[in-house]
Length: 167
Image (cartoon, rainbow, N blue to C red; front, side, top):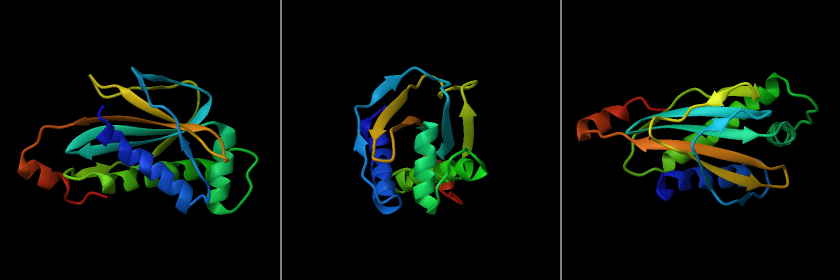
């Protein structure tokens, strides 16, 4: 995983904190993982396709998710409900969409986000690739963003086609 493939995601997290959450965020040292096993968190996952294939996973401890989504919508949450699940899905969608716009020379499309809660799951990465997990600290709580991205060999025509109708 190259730095130029993860930097747009790190920048997007910083943008979300500045512009949407009126907060700051501190980026930790990225760690390379072979895979991610389930932890009792809330995780928002979104896929990328086109001239690269990938997965972006936003991992939030429950307390951080309650605080971040609460700040985002201007309400206080004490328990996880559909608003929190929808909010985490929207956060990963915004981060991935913003990162997608920062890639140059790539035509990428986003899948719809999925949100999982609990610890009985395993996130599988794309074959022969590794997760790059970036930890973050903020006044709203700690969390991490895992990215697994691999370029796909494509002709110019395929690259142009991949960008048609991308969201």
